Image 1 (cartoon, rainbow, N blue to C red):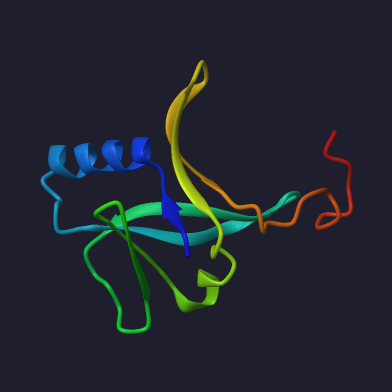
Image 2 (image 1 turned 45 degrees about the vertical axis):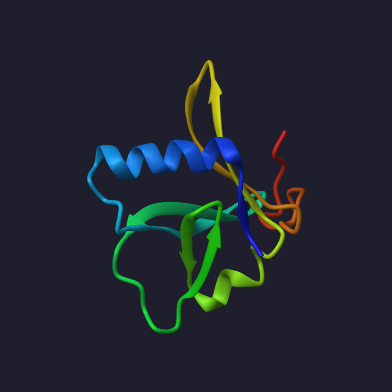
Length: 107
């Protein structure tokens, strides 16, 4: 099931504490479709539905709808810092790659 890296877990716990939202989970949802496949979004959420799939990784609660839990089975949530900014990303080795989903050229 989906995992979170040590760095991402540390950053997320700090964010939850800074915003006084220690009772919240990290929700993953489908944010749209792009040339490289499904685009996922993340948000802090304290309203967990009965049908949600819940995963605990490194003392972080991660929730998602049952419709995407299989797609994210081998995914990893990480935290990166680059010249362009910093933030959480989802690395999903099961995601479709290439440009076939839009029929165009992504180069």
